[in-house]
Length: 137
Image 1 (cartoon, rainbow, N blue to C red):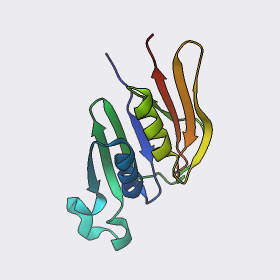
Image 2: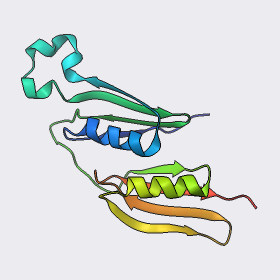
Image 3: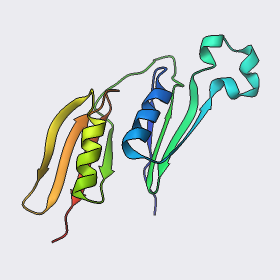
């Protein structure tokens, strides 16, 4: 069955953001810099530290990112959110607290009458996260 993987674009702070997500969510982070490519000696020095591709993997969680942008630069909006399905309420609270650090808590964690928990936040990199947990009764 197909799955969706979040791919985030950054403007020079991809490594910092992906490291932050790793601290919050755990997992293994791999980062490939532009300066590690064979053509690196032909690049300006400031470009060599840009992230060509980064991947954070923790079991079923996969987040990818890059500093490589087109001529239009980074355009932020609300068209993309990261939906994080949590295994339990404690995990959800922990992730919500960590991801909202220096960000903005939009909707606090709340439970519906059907046992579903939901929360909404924007992290310090201006990415929107939706946290979800369904408590089976």
